[in-house]
Figure 1 (cartoon, rainbow, N blue to C red):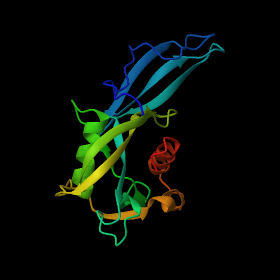
Figure 2 (figure 1 turned 135 degrees about the vertical axis):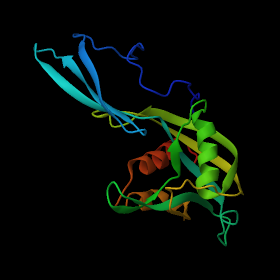
Figure 3 (figure 1 turned 45 degrees about the vertical axis):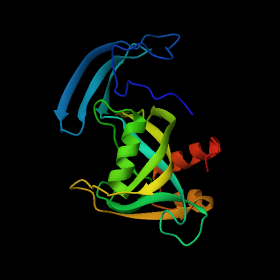
Figure 4 (figure 1 turned 90 degrees about the vertical axis):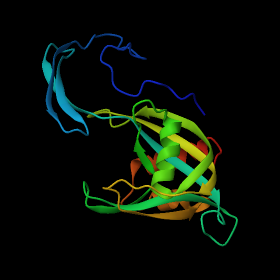
Length: 206
């Protein structure tokens, strides 16, 4: 487990955790080309070690929380007490695929990853968690995205009222914990779901 940090967006003025050792990679120009209301797109024109320059394109969007939520079978509507992982089954227009995924959502202003994880779990699946904790947070798809992701573990689930957004058309389902990774690896596989399950296993939470 790790602490829940307060900085969740890219900041060009922040001090890097690891600095390059032999070259400064100067940003010669930074330009925003479009705003969608969902994310900002643009590029940095950067000096490279061989003396050349290149435009590196990026999309900047808010951090997201991905929730690994576990409950005994009888709590999630199964007929046994075996631990089950709560998942959502939804269509993803971006890749035109029906996807089985861990619940997830954007971290809103003023929220921690754990706050967002608890809220998104309740809104998407109709379960309240007695306990939530941050397993890990990290950058995603660093070749093109300025986007942070936090993996949140949720336990002690109790039924509550779901509150789906107007663009959320999903079905809540469950998978036995010992089958979860195999299920997540089936196509169309989702990176955040595989990451969440693997990190939870690494922390001996599954």
